[in-house]
Length: 231
Ligand SMILES: CCCCCCCC/C=C\CCCCCCCC(=O)SCCNC(=O)CCNC(=O)[C@H](O)C(C)(C)COP(=O)(O)OP(=O)(O)OC[C@H]1O[C@@H](n2cnc3c(N)ncnc32)[C@H](O)[C@@H]1OP(=O)(O)O
Image (cartoon, rainbow, N blue to C red; front, side, top):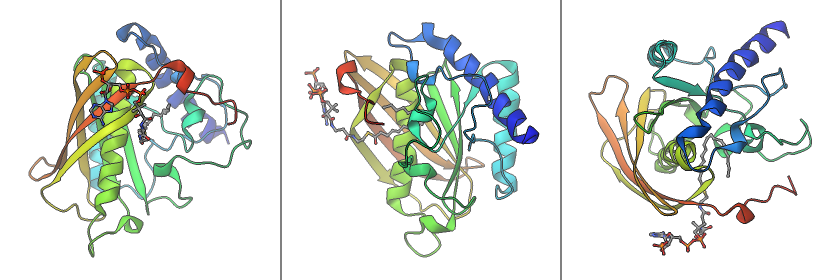
């Protein structure tokens, strides 16, 4: 339990940085201003025993960059509402974030995201597990779309607050082997009114293979459209 608390507190320290970013966008992300206390929700963005050497190495690289200050890891819970300051009590909901819906580590979406505020960039270190199979031995295109949507969307949220995907265009260039480590590298290109234009790539861990390219259009939500009263 102590180990769990210390891990969560480490996540909380990072969240503290996130809340202090509120000056960076016109619509600060209220949903990320969660408590620093050991609130009992597991942070899935931290390494686990199923992570490959490449996944761990990339994670450590960005963890080191975070210590210098340019990058920040963002925590990841299995429900998006756990990111919010007014999250409902633990156990009061049964819904789950799509990318965190399996109880077994390693078989689904293993990932950790880091954000660079100056570059308006969100990267995701992604290791697709065996339950994400499409073509034999390779990752399903829908799963690649999911991790792209999530990374592009998380970047858009960090710039502009709550958004929804309006458009996602993907070019699949090279298949992504199951169990491999890829980097999903996304940035916000421009913001026009409520429209947030984003672009991203999926590359192999060593940058040698360009697997996928994508653009995403996200629309800033009017607050009346976000109602969690039934959560
Ligand atoms: C929510 C908080 C969560 C917190 C989580 C924290 C955890 C962070 C960690 C991890 C990140 C995870 C991130 C996950 C990301 C997943 C994202 C999804 O999967 S979202 C589900 C799929 N998307 C939908 O279901 C949308 C359905 N569509 C709609 O609801 C509406 O169409 C909406 C809201 C997108 C826009 O509707 P309107 O009525 O508000 O706005 P209008 O007037 O239609 O459009 C505004 C402007 O945008 C243009 N526009 C709209 N759609 C367009 C399109 N498809 N193409 C081009 N332009 C479009 C319009 O032409 C208009 O432009 P002009 O202002 O007039 O210049």
